[in-house]
Length: 540
Image (cartoon, rainbow, N blue to C red; front, top):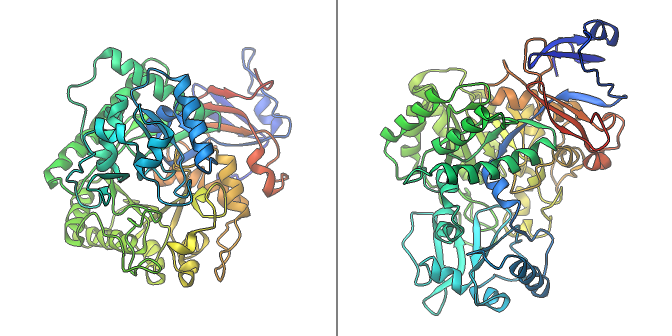
């Protein structure tokens, strides 16, 4: 991924850094008597993958929860929950992940889940992590059965009987249910922007670090050496810093401060303090995350035009002027901004905020980002390149590409807008910088599956082919991601002096048919010169 030397035969590593990149003969000549030599056997070596948008702590925490991906129909749902309940008799909440919005072929109610299990609190999360469905016992234990007042955009859906229906939209609404697990303090950043109170003691931090370690190991097995963790707070940074000191941190992690609509601008002092405190090579902050809207499936994504067959458009979580003021203040502080914006209305309002920041503060190398961009108005496409905005996109999210079905897309995006949906190549052609990611645990963290999704996607009806080529795709998972995270002077390319962050693909990626790349394993992952994953039977 180094434009000055795009291909080479070998790399030498010393002291956690790349010493040399060149021909096999040149590099082998550097090997002293104690050097470890790994013959890759014709496999493809790349810079370690940069996962530009994931949720490390949440993903690690969810690895032990019930997984409902692919489960369809009441009988299958009930069987899965009951088996999980039998295997986990002591859990205060039986929590499941990956429940499709159409899992029952109709809206899910607490009554449906009561028929699954009535005498224990159970709940299940949608794949996009923006909706939870809970049974009566869980709603009662969480204090939500009678309903509850929520901030704008967060809803405890009520039924005709005057009680909660069981459907909870967005973080503030379902946080009381998640709190039943005892792990809510791990989600405070994304849920409220706050910190745990009281501060967790050593025993609790040890438990939390085990969950992070599980997530790190899972990511290392997929070749990931750097990641932008799109949730978190100072507590997250402290846990990661402790793990670094203990020699247990196996990837470079960037953590945001979360700015919520209810916060005053003065709260950004906390963002600046995090940026100053955590600025090392392994744990860093320096950016502010915001949510402009929700998701299309629950119709909480903010659209310029109504959803098909409705008068609903969703609504932005920030007012336009409030958001401009926040962006200008974050930018003034020299911090980066990343905004979740899915609907075309949310994308436009985010671009407007970035433009206002530039007008007030002047242009700088900010690399502000928009996360997701599932729908964009054509007039806004060139504005990303003009304003230096990075498109942080997720190839696995496009319907019909990986795990999300194409069926149902027309219910949330009108067919005449499909050419404007999930644009990748069009944004790049118009000048936007690009970073690819998974949004794990929303989708599988596997970069190889993400690469396959990016290369095999078929155009939507009436839309252009939005695929980029193999090398451009690999760049978006390596050098592009590093640049988008202001980490290009540290990682993302294989150049002497940069960190020895490497991934060895278990095959020649340029010879593997695109439709089989996702099944290709990772032979070796190296972060900072240290092997963090070795494929079975290789380089043990």
